[in-house]
Every structure is written in C-alpha cells, then in structure tokens.
Image (cartoon, rainbow, N blue to C red):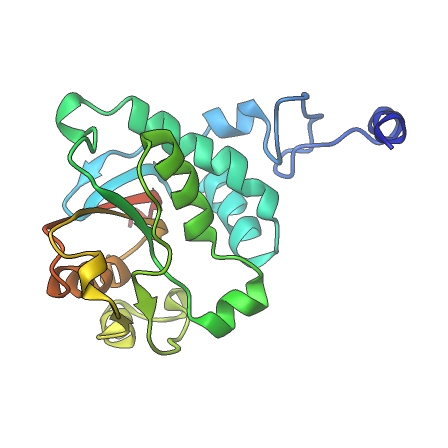
Length: 213
C-alpha cells in the first residue's frame, strides 16, 4: 500500500489548497509560502489573536470550518503554536491550568464531523503540556451562525448560550479559551462569563484570527 501511495504521489502530487503549488513531504494542506503570507496580529483588548482574518487565512479557515477540510488543522495549529512561542514572557500563558475550546452545538458538530476550535485547542494544549477539556463548557442551545448577523444581533444571539454543567471541574482554575475567529468578541465573552460564573479564577482568550474593520 505504501508503494502504491508513493507512486500516486509521483503521478498526482499533493498541492497547496490555497495557491496550488506542490507540497513538500512535511507540508499539509497549505504550503509554507501561504502560511508565511498571513498577516500577524497580537494582543488586544479581548485577548490574543495570531493573525488577521483576511487573505490566505480567511480562505483556509473557510475550507477548514465549512468545507470539511480537516487537514487544515495541522498548518493552522502550527500558526498558533508559532505565535505562542514568540510571545513575550508576560504573555506566555505560564499560569494557565487547562485549555478549553469554544464548543459547537451537538447537532452542528455532528453535521460537520468535528469542532474546528477543539482541533486547534488540542494542539495548543499539547504544545503547552496542559490538559485539554472539551466537555467542561457546553453550548446549551442552538444559535444562528454569527457571520450572518449584525454586531448587536451577535451578542443577543449567544446570550446565556453556554453553561458549565460540572462547576467543580473548573472552579479555581486559570483557563485558556481557544476559538478560530474573533469578530465582535460576543461568543468568547459569553463563554468567559459562563466559565467565571462556574468559578474559574481567570480566563484568557486565544484565537487563530481576528477580523479588522
């Protein structure tokens, strides 16, 4: 089977899903040139974001989130990890106890087949040598897709949409909350509120990308 795969790779080499260039053996879904073209972001009032949501990052996240392209979790996670490695000492997340992804509603996750934020969070947790808890925070009701809504509607849409069923699992802990995109901050704000109401000591938000208006 390995021989067949090698022959197929020679005949039909894997290509970057963004620009179409041939991928090297170590590249997955995106070539290094496309990864490096992402515009860097930094710390902001709502937390930390690794990149600006435009260009190749916007294209990659769209494929990852809506087109079933799970393989994008590898290069996109690497962008997050590289961002973490280059943070100054005060932003190194050294006080974090647990990594928590922003959850999907169970029906939506079943349709998609995975939670893209949890895939990103898993790699972040692995890099930081911290536990990942993908069950402590739950989306208690189905909400409309945020990208279809205006700013005020986004906050209303996710108000009280998240709960922590077992507060003892989060009480007194410092949480790193991971999501794919930050726009208005409505979703991460509601998640942070639910975690703090459950007794979390502190919540820091980390997203792969942030929209800039």
